[in-house]
Amino acid sequence: MTAGTDLRVGDRWVIPADELRWSFGPSGGPGGQHANRAHTRVELRFDLAASAAFPDDVKRRIRERLGADMVTVTVDDTRSQWQNRTIARRRLARLLEEAARRPPVRKPTRPTRASRIRRREEKRRRAEKKRLRRPPEPE
Image 1 (spheres, one colour):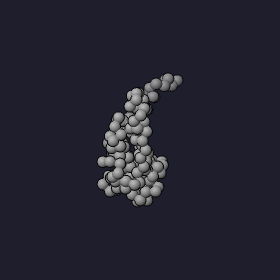
Image 2 (cartoon, rainbow, N blue to C red):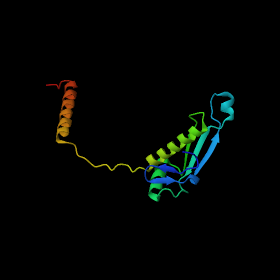
Image 3 (tube, rainbow, N blue to C red):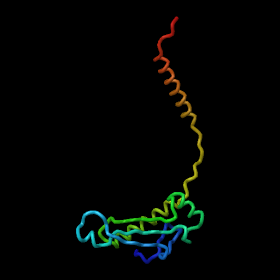
Image 4 (cartoon, one colour):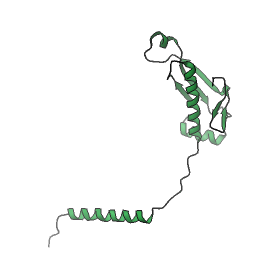
């Protein structure tokens, strides 16, 4: 799983390697000379609008969920650039797969007879409790 291979997104889509843009930089935080000189932070960019990897309806769904045409993943979890590249590829694939997923269709349901009865009983008890809190009516 290196930077030069295509990225598989779910079971249906493959992003060609030349559509992925990589950039590298030093990770932040402590670490002395290694952290200051080693470019282990990985940024992986994917331009959704320019890609032919997804059909238009899937692109629209991804754009609606992520809010942008340029999808970016930044990883500086480990001190190894190679491991960070692997993590970035996995995260981008998972992010795109989840964004492309169709939301489940909700089937409208009706309350059961028992739940309607419970609701009415609870309403009656609440009304009775409030009625008992009132001051007595003058005779």
